[in-house]
Image (cartoon, rainbow, N blue to C red; front, side, top):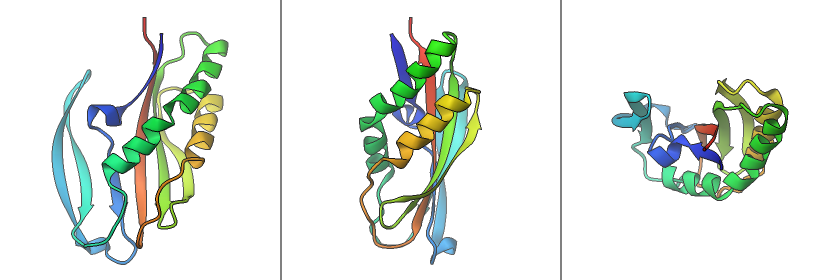
Length: 148
């Protein structure tokens, strides 16, 4: 069975909120996260201001609802390399309009440019709700592996 897992499903969707007008108003919380590789702290920056932005859970729901499209990218890579596996952290900036203004692979152990490009393309097609002001700077991790 082929599986794509987001680290968000393991409470590790780590994204920092960069609000254009109130960068100094962020407080940092530390969370302990368990993964198969051991435990390590994850920082999640949250704003102290009162305005509507999509929550981490909102973003996770939207990404997870579209995982089958992203899995197709991985399946295409498996046709070339049946041993293909790894983690890709996609960085994207979500504007207040709900549209993505920047997307890039922040970090990868997958080392397959075709799959990584396809993944970026699928993320750019995601529909996020508009919010009041500012932007979200999101680092979203995906794990690709074949389950036996």
